[in-house]
Length: 361
Image 1 (cartoon, rainbow, N blue to C red):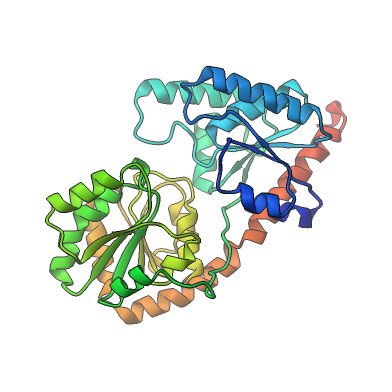
Image 2 (cartoon, rainbow, N blue to C red):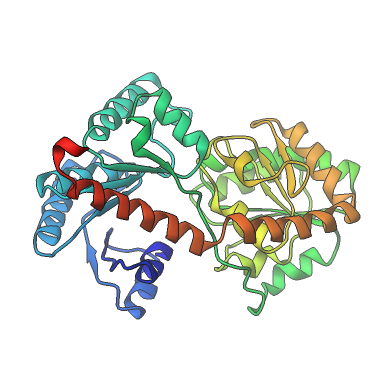
């Protein structure tokens, strides 16, 4: 959505094709960005729906004068690249974390790698959201290095004029508060945050810990909290968009992910001046300046996570220094306009390269 809304400043007119329902459509409609709804379903277990999505996408791009197709994420990355190939259009692909990254078995990793290599040969450019993602693509021989471009994710400024979540703010007023604000799914490993909670609360009895988010794992995580005997110093809150509405109530942002590409939530916390504690996975270390804007720790280690949380929650002066450093780092490196500008530059390069005579490439 952010990309589509910003590309006009760089000479590009965007169309957006996506699933039948998505939270981005109202904003795109207000901005008169054309959209096409496809029969997308999550995962690769719906071949008939995928075929229907491919047919409609072929009709959409065949009926317009498009210069570039930009596919986002693994599933759309397959469908959109096949459509672009059929219509002989340049195609750019953003995996937003390759599908072979994560705790998957050998069959899935092998299948995903084979698909990415096969499609990578006919992909004009792959946009990696982190240097780490680019290194991984080179190691897996997904595409030649010159077609792998790094464009870090960006986020908007902290929206300080919005009303805050009164329930969360009342909870945060009780003591220094660390919050895990994320979608509740396995990748984000929120259970590690809960497992760290007893250690944090033993060492900082006045602390407050918040789990903020929605997702399928919500009931399971609440049950885990009960089993750990966590008291009212640990509470769950529904997510209220935009993220700054709730981030501004936190003294510390925590992201205990098991795997990542380049998490936008860290950038949103940075924009709001909230110090970060996160696991050192994927490109997270390219976002957080360890020791300056926040602290990194190993994945899957509740004690290490607790140590970092206690170190910052118990040190207000250090947090104030990190608040300033976080806002500065976001403004210099991770603004939305930088992300849009760099993405548009990749499009420009792809179009120029396609226009060159084949023997000059």
